[in-house]
Image (tube, rainbow, N blue to C red):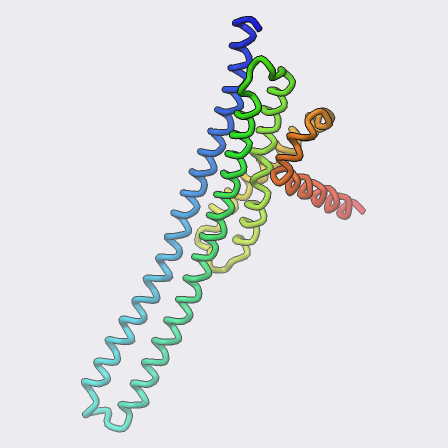
Length: 235
């Protein structure tokens, strides 16, 4: 292998690694931005919960201070105040829990997507380590598959964002959720284009594709569902 051939192969390998790393960093940024926005919503419900609890405590102290005037009404009024405060605390704690659950579920999917891309990255490194044995076609496959993987890992995120858009507790950030959903769908559209362009050569890399099956199979299932939905709408 000549020096120029070696340099060209190194360039192809670096291109794949650089691309995957950029997508990993993008996903990590998206995760951080989502968590930041959603935590603001969670904190707002926490503030309301704590404010109502403090107000109930304050009112209770006033009721006790006026017990000589309220007389027989003291106990019923105090019970009503405590019940109102307790119910409000439970309701806002429930809402806060729901919002926090959205954060944890979405965080987990972002981390899963990043983990899958790291898997592609690590596998590509292990398979291209020996420059004398790696073919140009194999390197092109890894780069093309990286383009596909960058879209495929977002399938579950699309479902998650569609679910969050239905939540009444996240209405305050609905526009941001819509933008994130559209961004993920755009990636899936690009992934479909990539898939259509490379699927004819997949039989040449069956072992690699079997290793990556957990990454692209959910994406292929997504494409099938989308195709079926379009046919039903036409029919």
